[in-house]
Amino acid sequence: MISGMLRYHLLVLFREPMNMFFGLGLPFLNLFLMSGNIGDGEGADFINAALPMFITIATMVLCFMDSALSHAYSRQIKFLRRLRMTPVKPATYILTGILSRIGVLLIFAAAFLAVTSTVFDFSIGNRNWVAFIGVLILTFGMFYLIGMFFANVLKKAKTSQSVLYVVFFGLLLLGNAFFPIEAMPDAVQVIAQNAPTVHAMNLLQSAWLDTGLFYGHSFIAVVGITVVFGLLSIKFFKYE
Image (cartoon, rainbow, N blue to C red; front, side, top):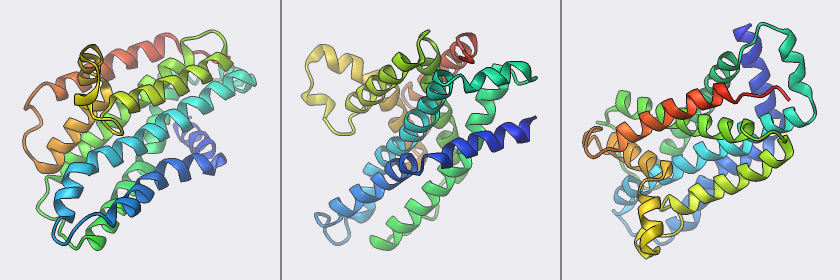
């Protein structure tokens, strides 16, 4: 059953190659566009600052534009109705969805690090890879569960698709990825500083620089958000 669900999720993933191209290719495109403005010897500093943003964007695209939207679409066409007649439970569906895409994310991260270290000629050794990979998986799980919650919480699957776009771009805008938090209105700053995107980037940067995962409250926030949306995703899971 587990292997069958893993194959199903991978089939869904590769059924829409443009989602993968957009999500996994966008960081490389941004890197190419920004590389011309980076002077000699500044590549390492640039990657140390920008790596969390690039990986978070790729993670969110996999979780929202691929997994969550595909699930909402499968609800809409009544495809998931067939799973009701099988032993597959919501927790199994969600867990295998996460497992099937972790490998894709790790391959992307390895490729991105290989390219950036070659382009900017700096070493990526002497890193705490256990902590970095662990945080990468944790943040991926958080965004996956947030996406699955919004893909299921509404009765109408088509409306869920629209909501997912709003949540996706809302989290990006609040996540300091394209618009500095400091330039936002005070009330919005408070929201942005506690957004899952910001906590994910802070935690990824701490793991990458090995400055301590428990500095600040990002680790607790990410774990808490993951647990809450994990429970909500199972509770509100819909086959149709």
